[in-house]
Image 1 (cartoon, rainbow, N blue to C red):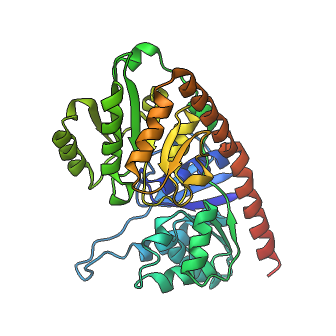
Image 2: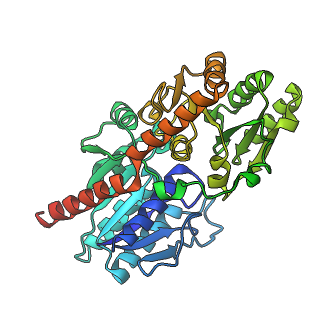
Length: 378
């Protein structure tokens, strides 16, 4: 198949999943065309089946905000015609599904029919999409898609609760490539992060308010009072500076490392002993899954799609939102007994295998084939 993929090209979960999906589909022989405003961060172009097309938005003084949806729609029309793209898979309802529908209607005027598969990832529904200004456009875009998928049952339920949806929503979970999470680093490299007697605690996110960064710091504060430990904070966002100030206030700045955005997440996770994810909400919890695939148990809140990923008392523990005391207690329960820690590490890997890329990509292929088949009968 010739598949056009539209996504955000950033470090966020939706862009990462869309990129990894495209690369996996390319390895399976499909022609993949990424169409977005810059090259996705994890996109490797050394593949004859992978192509990247940049969306340029001309600057016009007339517009207070430059019309990206208009530029994207026009680019999609051009790319479908030039490369004979058979299906568009758009990640994030707004603005991508909206722009894809406009492109689809323009193409129909020329006798070209291209179906749209829309994948809902989370904040496009729970945050952006539910805003009164955008809700009609999101509802319209979802209902006008030829197929709709959601990354978790929790997100599917939120979508059906928040919007008047007439389309069936298929749950296709996020995924990881297990082969990428095999330890390939020596113990001596661990010394760059911590001493032998220190446990390594990790948090990875975009440092937004929803990630509960202060709770991450407070949980670690409780941990380090009981055992030697270091905290690795990976990512960038508005909550980083307040987090650094909180570390100074608590007197633990020397035990916390702020990496910023990193391309060495696999190395950091390889040496980690515990992952913290106390979010207010998560549509899925991709960072937790990546940690589990690296053999890192997870201490998390029990919100959104996280319980579908992190299995309580097996791959880690779930607690109520803001329950720092319970999360701290569970963290110490795992960390203070090496045999117990090793068991949780092994279980984390075992649970993560349910979300291996080879289990999930065929589900998308089946949806593409069924969507194309349905369109042929129209």
